[in-house]
Image (cartoon, rainbow, N blue to C red; front, side):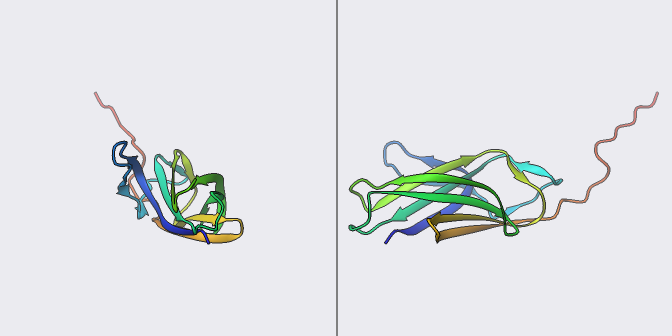
Length: 138
């Protein structure tokens, strides 16, 4: 049976060409938008799956993004195991819409079976003074 070993969200994921090791840089646990609606400038997911020898050498999964339980983006991603027991996939997302505060959940599914999820707290917009109003006097 195919199982998730890792699902994480970070600002960047770097895969070392020499060692093939993956590093997640600036892991995202919470978002603090100044205003909503806005966009998430950079969010990268790292997903690692394990499989048994009897499983197929490929798996098409769906990576979904939900804000407070409402899905607003989904993408199919393919994992290729070949003859290995583990496969990794890195997905870069730029400009994901952020329409409110609450919980941003990233869900990885194989068919209808949920393999993993990752929750990010989205804080309410920061209360600030009026937007950059500059007064010039002579």
